[in-house]
Length: 360
Image (cartoon, rainbow, N blue to C red; front, side, top):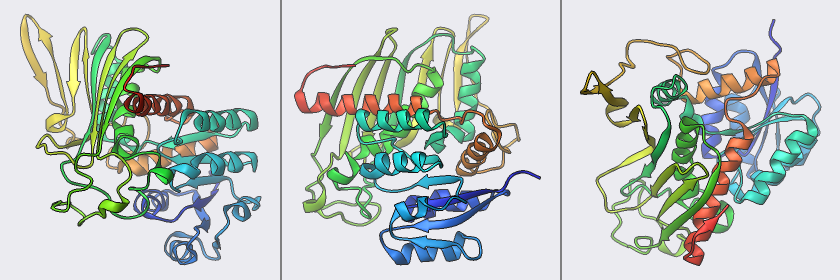
């Protein structure tokens, strides 16, 4: 019988309720035994809905970490607290799944990685978009050499008017930024992962606050408060890797565009290209003819990394993560990879502030 892993949830807000806890509930051989939130009612509600009988609740995460029965902690708090909670959890002997982004800056992400290495505990970051069917297929094609050398890519996370109006999303201090660090991070992670390239050389970035003060908003989730909108409404980056490969990164919560796509990548290589339009497409040349291949994701298939084809991405992510803990193998999302994402995001923000090239 497989080991039943005991899990503690730190932060019982939107991402925990919408992704982590429902996904873990789908997986056998794990139990959510503890829940922590600074708002007691949220922890109690989560425990009642997702916890085992007798699940404990806390308002201080350090008290949760004292429980020796807990094997794994999921950190689902605002970005600013990712680093110190993760480090404390690792030092308390827990394996940690931290929600994306890894941290608000490179220095804090490095502290997390160092703590994981020092304690020998596993650390992964919540980039569940890797586990979508189209993402898995693109990665499998890249691994098979279909694209050849990927030298140009686009990482796209564009919303027309979909600014999150809840929680602390608009608070620069708590989040470290807006759409770039929130959804641009997913697109960048997918792109680097597909390319298998984690060596940036320099970048140029721009951020904008052009629509944040609008009162005529047309926002998907109702009007935001312009006085609270302290992060960018859109951000763009141009990243050059050490081998010359180039990535264009686009992100927005509010932008006057109809090209609305979120957490997708486009890759162009020496042998073929791929994108995530129309469900996913591979393009190339065969027998002196252009071709477009469109995989049928309704016809079954096997996930590239782990889990049944019918599983939701968040469930696949949670399953492979717990399997990695149980079997002492590497998780799909390595902390070193997530650290590179944070480095590039920080570089784009710094370039936008200085108006100059940022060199890694």
